[in-house]
Image (cartoon, rainbow, N blue to C red; front, side):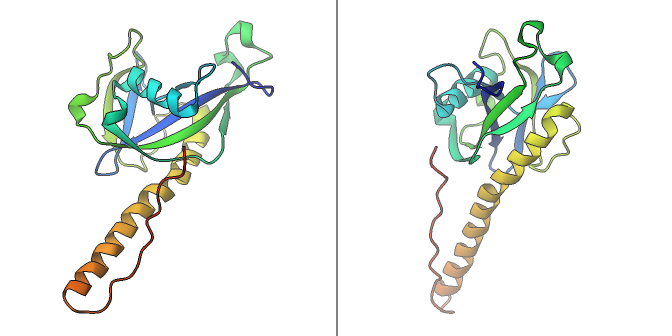
Length: 190
């Protein structure tokens, strides 16, 4: 399913653990690492596609994660022509993606790379959120940078607000002033 401009609708997933490390999967029989991602099927919403891909590629179910946010708009990347199937050449340009930021609620042992009959990954690891992107295939690096930057605001703002609120509650308990009101900023609607 391609849009009028030649882009296939897709979802990307940035899965973080409690330490804000990101999940990286090593593509089967390759030396490249990437985040889980996959196409949106006809009739599927981006959220439905994200949960399907999360299970197919990582073996996690909705109860194993919590949605923290998503990119506001589609992020696009072009696929070099030598990677495009012959029958799609001239029509297919690349992918347009909605990226989701998920918090792992389950345990590492819940990850199962063999949840589908066609595994995408043969290894996985947790890495720093700002891991260098040299191991990502070159034509995807810009979109990874855009997604990481946009969603970092959601991830790290939350941590800052939590620390800020704890500091003021602690000082109030010690009798050092009134606690500051802090509005909770929930994840954008998905």
